Length: 250
Image (cartoon, rainbow, N blue to C red; front, side, top):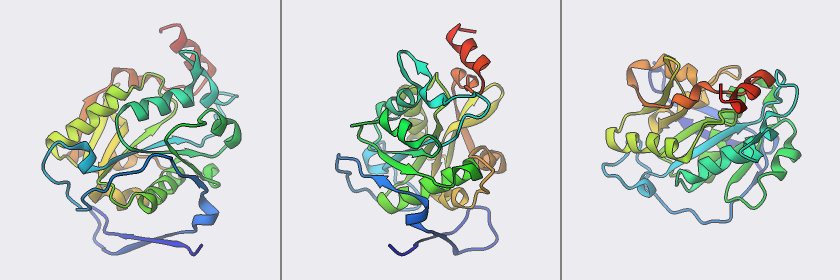
């Protein structure tokens, strides 16, 4: 397969026509989900209306890290009697979006095994060690290849155990109601993930440095950000102490 070319104009950039070239065979292998996807309007600015299917919102779930600080796979930690990765993926599906893309990397097979028979697309980022930005770009590149009609994307991580489908729906609803280009989650006096980016910001996502995450774009374009409260967002599981405190309700 030849390299995939995706060309976009970046929001806030003095230059236009950036080209982003990714080697599809080197960067990812994917398992197509079994459910068919519906077509949607491919305008850069979402159309008026509250039809989620028409707006074609997708989700990228980042789960490629090696959990170095945890000392074990955080993706496999038990939350409500199921692995955290499965818990997060179920929340993504419960949001009602049709296209959920999960990015794996470290411990790929063990993590893939907990996602069996779910209507999702799994992408392997073989360069996950480069940083979260690498996984975001791998997910975005493949999302645009597989679902080019996507009007907005929610980027979420797998280590927020309080995440629910309802919170993700609220992000999408605020996007539909306000047409705001960035809808972030508000917690601990900050705006962060999960975060929705409308189509005009796709090229900014593709230009992220490997070591940066979605919050870099949130900070850079803070005047364009709307938020939805997510009190549980302050819980992210990076260490065994984080996990113990969450389980103990602290």
